[in-house]
Length: 336
Image (cartoon, helix red, strand yellow):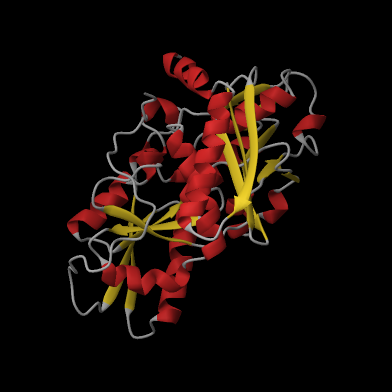
């Protein structure tokens, strides 16, 4: 079996079961656990503002903290424990009662959550595309041979190498401001970032080009915000319910079902993106080697009206990839 590079035991993308124990009553305030990077704080403050508008008589506070993922910047995520390192400390705050909810970039949330936690809300997705940031070329396709491209993502590395095997794709870690600074210092000829983060921070002018999904398929859950709570907090779930965006929740449910079925983790070069047209959901996915030498692709669609339908579509996409040899490819990736 493909092993995750984080140690987590139980998954639920479903909201917590109603009727579970409530830890405090009445709920007079809400505390949001958040990382302290500028983007994470923007996301938490965004949710804070929405909750204050929804519940004007209730205090909504932030509890900022630094995670291990923020502290370790000299190694790639796949070598130090994966994106789960960005959420563990926040989950601890939820567990001990220092916070009631945690706001995450959904693409950073592992496919399986620890026992006792739930992904209560998925909010409306921003632009899911990747952004090309560079002063030297209008697109990575226009770079000269041997140019240096920075990215922290095996998914992006795989797809860029497949399109431009003559480029040097090298690791890029740090928060958004750090990555932009490294580019400005000349360490890279261009870097690839999520467009959503740049737009949320008002940095649209740094975007040289928005990269088509046909060229770079996004990460699972990219550009959506997820709110995690303890599974025994239906009071918090009820307070958050108006923030749920049903189309985004269904699309990301399908994407995460696909990734979960394949054992998707920080060391899996996997891209997936779902969108809804009418009553039908279309899901595209890609799995391959980081060097771009082999890539498996699938495109499926179905009528989707519920989480069960979305999950079934994700499982269908995973099975189609398996038919192309996904299990063998994943085993080879595990062996290094």
